[in-house]
Image (cartoon, rainbow, N blue to C red):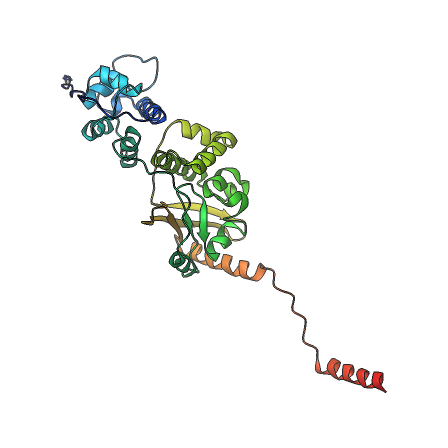
Length: 321
């Protein structure tokens, strides 16, 4: 079938607001990364020659999005202002972006304003009551940095006594850098890649947050996998899913997880873990029992027997006589 060129969409006219330099660089890196993972056959174009580099050519993206090749090149180079929403949607269609990647494109391109840096907001008392009101389901609250803000006893039973503190105070860091937690995750690669995708989207929404930058920098420095996946600019935002765990106490179990966003300004998220089958349900209950019976108890002095009490009274009488 003959392929007919698509008429070019006119480039935006007039002065356009300039985005900060780091944001322009992020946009160019993202466009190049997603372009590199597509081939002509993925977008319905003929693949008639060998390519020196993988992925679509710039002129092919421009053709699919109906924009001029010169404007698209300048867009990747960060030399244009903020593109319009319709143009960004056309680029998203051309590059076969997922809904999460489409939203990410609009944020880093400046079509949607990023959220300003925020201090961690205190956890609402009602949220703590909600966490404690789910005694059989592991649940915990995180912010957009993946810092653990609060959790219930069932989460402690599942993830360990140190969960939410020290090296386990950040769930992303815990997943990549705490070997015990990593070994528990039988679907570690998938879950870890989802975490990288979430952090990438959060970084675009909160570009000036120093704590988020600290988390990302540490993970890029300490984890080769994180660094590789961060550089490929994959964006994944998953609100629910299933994963397999192998707990040192109860063995293998399959659980579901749901990530529920709160409407607070702090961009907090409640994650709830639920059993995927009766085996997992029994395992989660066994973990609660195991934790309850293994916690240290305050010293309790044994009650004296009647005989020993009588002997003590006799001794006191002899001492007075």
